[in-house]
Image 1 (cartoon, rainbow, N blue to C red):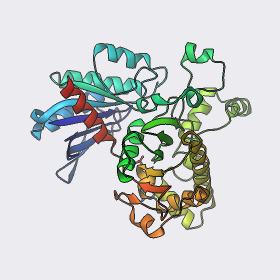
Image 2 (image 1 turned 135 degrees about the vertical axis):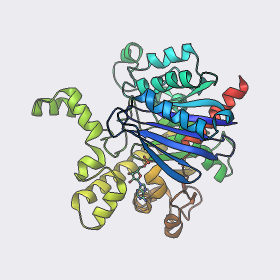
Image 3 (image 1 turned 45 degrees about the horizontal axis):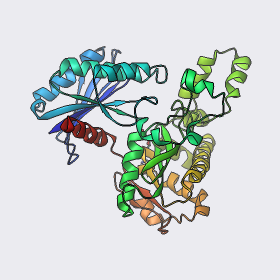
Length: 394
Ligand code: AMP
């Protein structure tokens, strides 16, 4: 049985047809720039890349094309279910779930918490229901893995009434990735599923780190929204909240406009003035670009500082895991961060670090306890596996 995995965003929809047991990907693709004249459907089948213009297609037209494609490739009959990435499940979901009208209503209730992500996620669910009505659908939440955090980690020190009245608390994101790579690290360390004190650093365009104790998330860097925590591609991560008031008074911009700048024009892009792309920044820094150098310094320092802070929730450190585009590929960032964290007993193995790139997993320290690992994340596989499990159980 194969699973169709769907990640429906505001202007793009990623899809994949894969075998949840072997991880074999029969088809991967993305509808990009949905709603614009440059909209396109790009896919990879059998190792060959293809592209087709969609000329201003909306989400419905784009997904209809994607379903027509998997039909044309003879993949529809093999499908056992559709797994959706859903960003915000609030406090309502602590695990993946079969989608029912009640679940849809609950995801709708979480829209105030995830105003940018939950509406397109819900659109994807509605469209998949229309286009593939015979298939069961499953929601896999970015927030679910972090529902095990204790109050001391998820509460903000603000009036406690805000929690009850406005759901103000820390939720955490990238849960599917943190869950997958921490479980892989347990395997690599010969630990059982309920053992180990592991830090996971998911470093992509969005970045977050999580403290996983005995298989459960006990703290994480992202909060009410994915803006909190580490320095990211275009997001600032944690800043003094009074900065928003200061900037509205200083510039005349609205609070929403300043928040938009913290989300879209800050982080690596804002510091460097050049790019949000780590590869471009490494190259520029190497050529002497000072703002790129500063951006890398701040990125690594904030990351190391927050990782060290997360160890408090663990009480001990067995392993630090790097994943995501940067974590899986940047030899330089891993080297800088491990250098800053040397006091924890992490001793970098330069040769192993240089080799752990482009999907290769492995230990990159001489030290064994604690050790640093590179583990390529597989969020699609996790979504497919959860979907298959729930479909079979039903
Ligand atoms: P993701 O969101 O997980 O796809 O990660 C995207 C980020 O990974 C971007 O900042 C890329 O520049 C970065 N990245 C990918 N490959 C490399 C590499 N070889 N070296 C440094 N950064 C990389």
